[in-house]
Length: 224
Image (cartoon, rainbow, N blue to C red):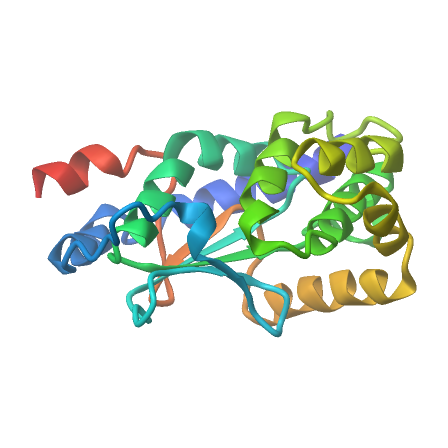
């Protein structure tokens, strides 16, 4: 039953991507000037927004808005990061987009250990208080993504170890990870994604229009 439900989520997500306007919309990005600052890197451009989402943009760049809705336990989200995540960050560093990353838990209450794993990882990402280290921790979560149905995946001790690895204070991080306040923030962030009509992960939108993330973006943009 659990496997069938997870497959249903994946199928819905793939159909959404297939129906997207995809690479035609991406042509808008090529019209934006390259505003890269000398020596700027994606991690230097990260800031935390009040709603819990993450903004990556050069100062003054507010559009077009490229949104990434992701779940750290979702294998397709890991695929997106490997295929187009770097390109999205490059566009942000070049001033071509304002990149907004929206981590949340897509799995419902009946998803058992899969939801539990996802939610622990989401809470951990919310405990990264240094924006310059957020991307590094984000990448650690995907690098160590467990099987969806593995009980105890993204264990607390592992999440704390990843935090130490990117230079975060262990005790402070662990306290945050076990906080009711962090738990409430995670739930609010997930609720926000659903109120915006997100039904599967990853969902990628450019100025509100869904994009096909399953094909490399770099080549078509370079050829435009």
